[in-house]
Image (cartoon, rainbow, N blue to C red; front, top):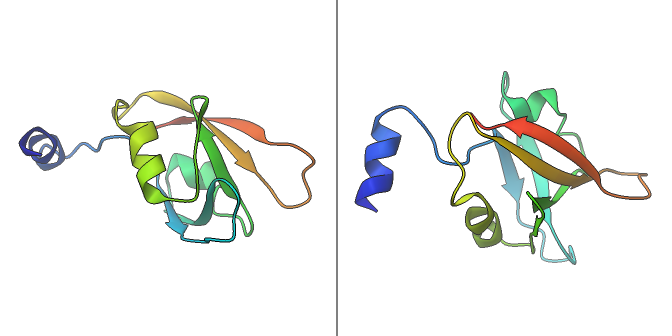
Length: 102
């Protein structure tokens, strides 16, 4: 915990993409992307679009818990590229989006 606090105090984040999530227990997998922060990579990738679900990060599948997101980004650093796999309304399959973490 102390090492994470030191990183955050330096003004950097660990694995932050600029997207917030709503918990949806009915989703069989993934996290419902509720909104993207203005000016972030998540906004540019339209991750906050209604109905968008994040299902994997760098190939690590997510369940419908924030803990799975935290586990997936645990080793990622600010400025690093990551592949977010998303499901969008009306899409027949998931789409990979490369994001530079904030």
